Amino acid sequence: MRQILGFFIIFICFPLLWLSYSLIDTEISTASDYKKELGQSIKLSEPIISSPVLLLDESGATFSEDYIEWRDPLPLASIPLFIQEIFIQSEDVEFYNHIGFDFSAIFRAVFANASANARDQGASTITQQLVRLRYLSTEKTYERKVTELMYAYELEKQSSKEEIFTNYLNEIYFSNQVYGIGAAATYYFQRPLNKLTEAEMAFISAIPNNPTVYNPLENFDATKKRQELLIDVLVKKGKITSAHGESLKAEPIVLQTKTKTQLYPTYSTYVLQELKWLIAEKEGFTEKLKATTNEQQKLALENEFQAKLNEVIAQGITIHTALQPTKQQEDEQKISTILKKTNELQAASVVINNETREIISLYGGTDYKKFDFHRAFQATRQPGSAWKPLLVYAPLFETTFLTPTTKISGGSYCIGSYCPKNYGGAVYGNVTIKQAFRLSHNTPAVRLLEKVGLENAFAQMEKFQFKHLTEGDRTYSAALGGLTNGVTTLEMADAYSSFIDGMYKPARSIRKVTAKDGSVLYEWNEEALEVWSPKTVNTMRDLLSDVVKNGTGKGIHIQSPYLGAKTGTTNEFYDYWVAGLTDTYTSAVWIGYDMPKNMKSIESKKIHLTIFETIMSTK
Image (cartoon, rainbow, N blue to C red; front, side):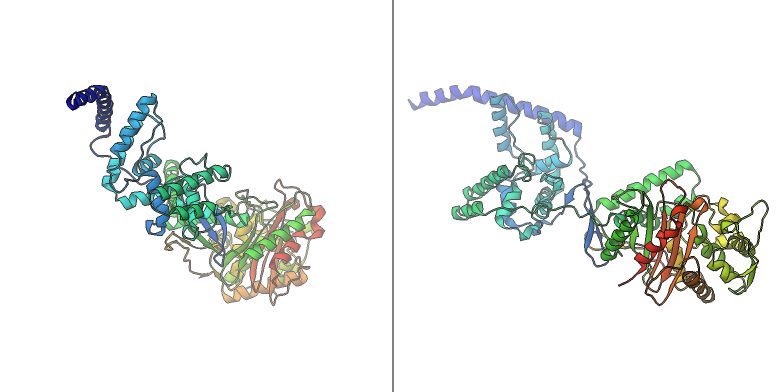
């Protein structure tokens, strides 16, 4: 009887065995075909993962974060065992035993899909999920599945289980552009992973199963139910007690979602531009681009530089800056308040710390948004008479024996067809150089530039950071600020810093750029050079001080042992400038309209002097 029963069971199971064989044969055949296509060895490369760029102020506090994806990768040793168990028990209980895929799970999926005439049943191990995250689509086809198996097998050969699990936990998606368990902790609770409670850990662990359905910001209740399911899995597998599980499920979950830090956009926009200049300089691209005249080579270099820049930024860097947040905030508020009284008038300003030669405050325009047009370093405007100290007077005292008491004609003067006029068309007799400087007479400045010589004067300008000067600027109209492109507010403040003590080092906002491990990737490391002799510096400081006391800068009141400045007005009153220094700061201020128009009507208000006085005052 038993024999007959055995034969009967074999007989009725034969169709099932035949079906199993057919399905397995199909899978093996498909796998063989894919193996031929993929080759004997699959070379798997590490994916490029973009990490946040952090900007720190002078005290080390974060004031700006730049990222598209929020990531905070952690080593496996820093990921609590409680979380590791959640993912192992819920996603891949045989993870430490299989070769990248689990045959038993595959057979279960095959039969489930065959019976349903569909392909919905999953059987993905943690290794397969990592492969899918990195290299493949999420399309549910047998062809993609077989490719996934091949990749998973190869990944297991090339990596340890610990490496695979670490990468998986750091790369899975947690909704809201958050990737990795460490990032999920800081994004949803604003605390590091090891500071979360076990209930909170289980809560964020619920998200990756379906980041849309379990997005806690939109579907909190669904996420909570999934969290409780995961806790039940741990109880069922004997990893925690039932009582512990119930206490975890009862614990309230209160989200404290992270908001991207985006303070002081005027300053952060400039810092990111300076970062490009820094990397270009240190990686040799600046010199290479200067040296090439071939447009194709130039384009190739620019593409190469952009690739390098992207590579540096993607690794997640921290930019340490000289920002003084309190001053930046106060300067922005006060300048904006001053400009509100006008109609569409714009302004730009730069403040440099005399002791460190660092940029500590910037103003790029009213209602400034990040990456808007930045008037402090992108707007080139004619500098007017504010240019005279740099191109004419300092080179004059540096290269001749003339003094401020030397007499010079203030009468009409022509060099060839160029015939400059004094303000208002006034004609003066002989005046001292000091008087000409104080009242910003034009014809004496042109006479003095002729005495210095164009080549000598412009050779001095090459020591600074004027990026927009051209060969066509080497004319006598440059004595009055008549330039082809003009200069920026930053360039003016930077050059005026040489009047602190005759030494010059480019003003920078970036102190250093560090990697995630704290190692220094880039820093300027520039040495200060003497550009003016002590005699020239002392003379220039006296002349600048006299302008404030008795000349065109009269009305500037700042409590400082030293105060010196020079004003500038361009043709048709399109631009008003003031640049100068105290014992503490060096600054330049520009006001005008984006589409230049005559500002004669507001000349008497001396708005630029008010702004200068405001940002140069110290408490």
